[in-house]
Length: 114
Length: 112
Image 1 (cartoon, each protein chain N blue to C red):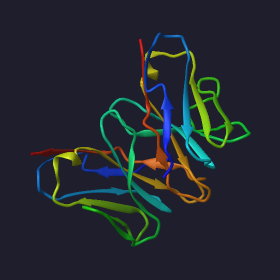
Image 2: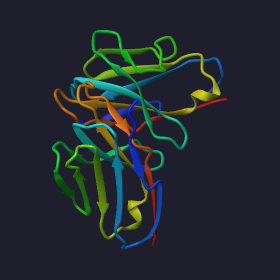
Image 3: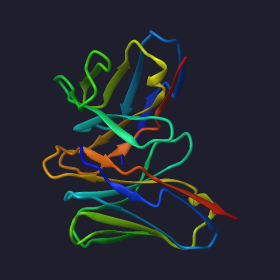
């Protein structure tokens, strides 16, 4: 399986600011995804990060709030914009290979918004 | 959206006991995945199931893909303290472009 790293591992941010989270994979992967895990909850898919085109967002998530970049097959960023305390969550990236139904997750970024 | 019903929500057991948890859905899934998440970590893949009826083991863990393609179970035998964590099932719906739907998780506590 791929080795996935995320930066930062955690952060405490002020309301109204933005935070960009990076996801780096040690090998080229076709599919990259971003998830949110609210405190004590399960994982909810935010979007699929598409290389060379705009991300595909799930219902309830919009590009203005969660802009995503995917400049190549090993890297993606998720920005949480104009943050509020309700955005306090763990943000996770995951990857899957071509034709693979199996996803592997990064360690997550723990965000607290004050 | 699609929902997975995962049960039990939590379990508190003694070391050495066997554990069973399951997930059910009203929809058919192509793939069932079982993950474990420990505090401060991302989910780690334990077992992946790709075919109806498939039974797969990974050490003390055994999981099965239900014949109807709408359910899966995970068994842990002879539990040990390091089995503590939250176990999530996840399924992939046909035609969903590899997107996963997650259960709500089973919190497992093992008493030494």
